[in-house]
Length: 284
Image (cartoon, rainbow, N blue to C red):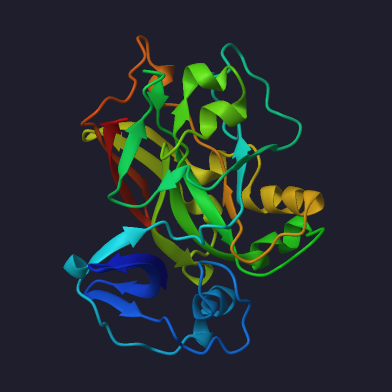
């Protein structure tokens, strides 16, 4: 099942629906059946992430040309990120040793745009870069979760671009990773029942049709389950929390000379089996 948040013409509010090849089935207003009331901003969707079979079949009510995508997470959801989670030289340089534990940082609201929305290259830097990542959405609450049990807490998966401003990243990770509308997420959440093993997934990035990044999730230093377990020691995880799991080599800054994003660039971030997230770059 693919759950999305979207808007329709003449209505600024975000709705929640189920995506199909034919269009969108709106599920706003459905009884959640007692499921957790958080996740992507609607109780029925939250219940579906906890148990996809709990959501009844709903007919398609909107064609694709009638909807505009929204970020498929509640605007107030926590965005938890694992940095330096693939073996790569950039942006740290040299022969980088694997971290002893996940490198954790946050993304605040306003950082991410949706599928087919514009990424904003900030006026204060030309070093605007991309990072394709597998995103994980928590489906049920947990604390001190064991690695062996961690995937049972996953509600679904999405595609995320951890947009980065590299010179400001040298000020701090938080500065470089959190520019306004610098990253993206979407197009939807694919529920966990459709992904047998996240380690079998791939992350791919193309800029103007040229492949720049490709790696298997099996190449992560810390697996999805290990990241979930680690973060659950830091805080209780809640339905709707989003975890970004890191990006492989191949970003613009890793090239010689660097290949920074510029206005007009068209980017595709893909996780086969989940979806393709598309964005275009504009100047601030």
